[in-house]
Image (spheres, rainbow, N blue to C red):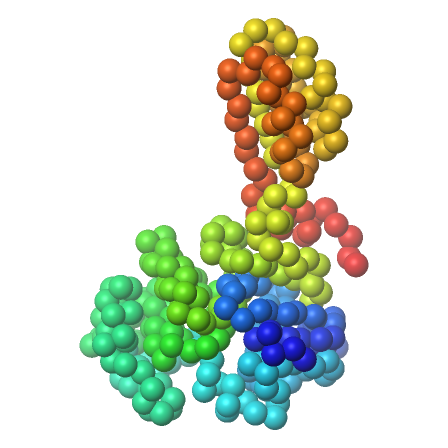
Length: 302
């Protein structure tokens, strides 16, 4: 497997008894990218991540994480990875400070306490209160800090912003962007599509244990549908617009405005419009959420 990829899985198979969870999952995550793993609960996101860390073992396929085989060298991988599980279990009687000191000892005291304090301050996390007195959101903050505090090469996060208010969600996303800026690769699963759209370089969509799309986030959005409203300075036929490839007329208002649906690039439409008396031009692009829903509601199983 290529060393240019931090994560590679090929033909990953996993079942729980008679229930098949993964059907030959293939993934390649490049060094230094933020990679989004998108799917609803039960699609196979958590199972895939747990296989990467040898927390569970697949029935088939191969995995490489940081160039290593998780089944042969799990400790070496965990030493270089920051992991936030979807369901975080902590000693309820410990404080956040004690939790971080515990994890730091496990990792050979590699963390800088000033950095731990900085992350905690940014998330408004009280280090002196016992975990048992924390809300779900504050427990999630503890999980985020422990995953990032040792500046790992690879960050694996399973639903990282669950339970956080919008301001804290944005702060966590900023932390992930900063980790990438400092050379880390970030792989995170989510069903909150807006945050995947905001920060990822590429995204994989998983459906019922199968990868149905892997693409650059920008490319996925660019090739999706857009609605375009054009208003003219005077009544205009503009029939040439409706014959352009990928352009479909949705509505026409007495020649003064048209509503178009455009698939793919906008270049041909914009160039053609230059010959018409346009007073206003509005465009609304399909969101990643709408693309995602198309895979789950409008497509047959592959």
